[in-house]
Length: 147
Image (tube, rainbow, N blue to C red; front, side, top):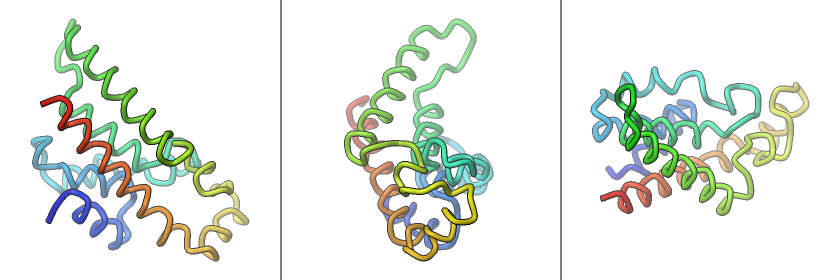
């Protein structure tokens, strides 16, 4: 199963978008899938506040685990993490129009009306998986560009 299939499989089982993206790359990150699921458990739905899309946050966690600073005064790690962060955010916004959950969904998911709108329009089951897939694709592109 490739990264995208693995992420979409997790998402289809009602895992958060953030959890799904991180778990898809757990092996490369040197963590277990269970650890990945725990790590991403508080970032779905834009941290439940409609902020940065959980798929993007999950992708940033993956990139941080792969390329982030690993010690104090790790100037090279800092520069690489800044670079991959900017690539992720910019590419996702370019492909999807925004990286803010509420903007992507077209409603305020923290309100009862917004949540109902998402349910009524199948956004969580039809739109959000597309965001998970895009996030995974961009992470794969960034990894390939770093090798």
